Image (tube, rainbow, N blue to C red; front, side, top):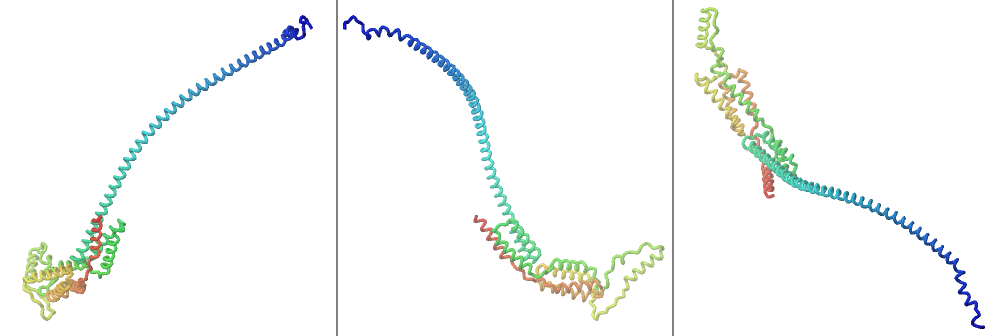
Length: 346
């Protein structure tokens, strides 16, 4: 083989470009198509990006607007919260002031309650003192009972356990006083007073009935002079002559001026009996009433109704027992002292 003879291997490269040109055009077309597709895709992507960018911008704008609104709402909310805090601070200040006023009112109420309690305790002490005085000085049991009942009612209103010992002592003293026999001292005193007032009207045995003022008065103007003269003569005759009957064996005769002294002495006897009644002096009381009865029977007209009524009244009063042994109030007074000492220690 010579070197001038071409071989297939040397000829192939020269003919190969002619065979690849369609492929190149196809590749170029494909490249162009791909480029067009890529451009379209880029365009579509760009449009999508633009739309997305616009959407994002819109949303950002909306978010910014919402954020501004939210910031405004937050600002308004903060202002409302600050206003509420201010109001809450004012309410707390008022509440603190109200608490201070409440404490002051509580202290004032406690002070008033203590003052009322102290006033009530003073009233109870005065009532117990009055009851003791009425028993010891006047022997007036009803007034003493009323005073102790008043003291017990005052303690009942307080309703405090600390006052129970005092109320028990009051109850015991009231039971002892209520068990005493009743002596109507005011009634007896009034009856004695009526007797004293009626002494001047009782007729004496020696002088008969006291002259009425009407008997000693001058007669009315007569129809004629001779009737007036006859009336005056009759009055003079009545003053000179007196007819009197003595049924007793030994009538007590009195001098003309002794009738007044007798009545005054009888009044003194009755007054002494009245004083003895208040002093509960049984012996003096009965002795004065007996002397008064004797004087009525000896110097006064026992046939007169007023004298008989006075004697009956004196007999009834003489039989009355006025010297009743009265109990003391030592238990109540001791309980009161203990209560006062316990309160002072507090």
